Length: 452
Image (cartoon, rainbow, N blue to C red; front, side):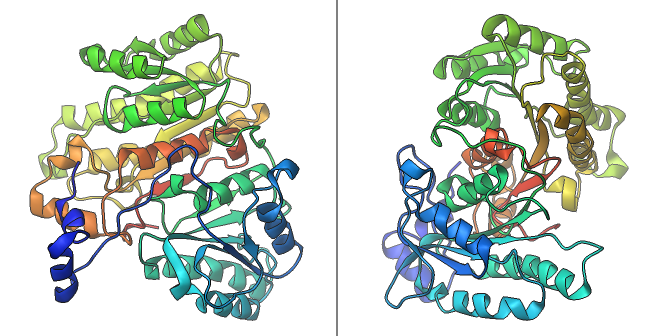
């Protein structure tokens, strides 16, 4: 969907008028296209200790040595326009340890290129930590979230929080760092993603990490679901596109576009899980990834809520996922580092007026992935959720114009996201390198100002 305001304040005479009037001028976001460099310019890596050396070494090493062959600097230099800033803060033990790297980072913020990336790498604050260490580690979270709100020009700030005992070079830590540095994370901002274990593996080809994997996407006929199908296929997966029979024609078009297969099934049917699994095994020989995208809204104030408006939303958005997952988990055919990625929502985190039914279902998704992840761990599997904020879809296009304009500006990037932004995040969590991220929620909201 078109954001007319975004276009007007960035082009021609209207851009000059907007500047003179001091109007907000959100920058068009740079999004991923195959073949583009990971980072378009020099990278500054700040911090001390062996973790900093390890990260800098990974970024600078030639690809022949499994590095990323980036132009890495360890200290700020004048007259350099930085494409990315990586702050390795994993070895801080006292808030005082943050001062030097943070202030050196501050000295280059005005030298960041448009669309730059700032990424922190830190450790979680634990209840058993010494107070000073816990303060330093928790302080990183507040620092990163605040810094992300200060960045301009479509730049983003995100953090990787690596569990104690897990190397900062573990596959999931490396995968998360690469995702946040890339334009795949264009609308992910102000987020701290936890890495829980060393599980997972780095792909042979970063451009096609899902090669050889078979994925199912529900609600695939249009919008975010269709975008997820496209991105998973681009990343190498064979995709089964699932939607209700009424969407059959659109569903076939999406499946044909990526040379996948289409399956018409209502996810609320008792046998939906069995039919999905049987189709994947019969047509493609395996099933590795399930993306629960199908969802509906029936918005009403709770005082006006009809039983069918409450029941239908919970049936599609959460009960169907639980039933399908149970079939997969007990089948014995979903055991090769499987991935479940479910669509939650910022409404399920922060709540939203008129959406008690929707927020309940999406909050339920968050609880479901948290409890499902341990069940998949013995197979190297994961379950995680993606929580979109305001995304430009047919659904949000029906919001009254003024309300829609306000909703777009309520995040640090001052614009709505695109379906592809959700799809890129789903693809990352479905990838082999994300194996150490279990039961987590990653928001795709441009750092919307609601909820944690």
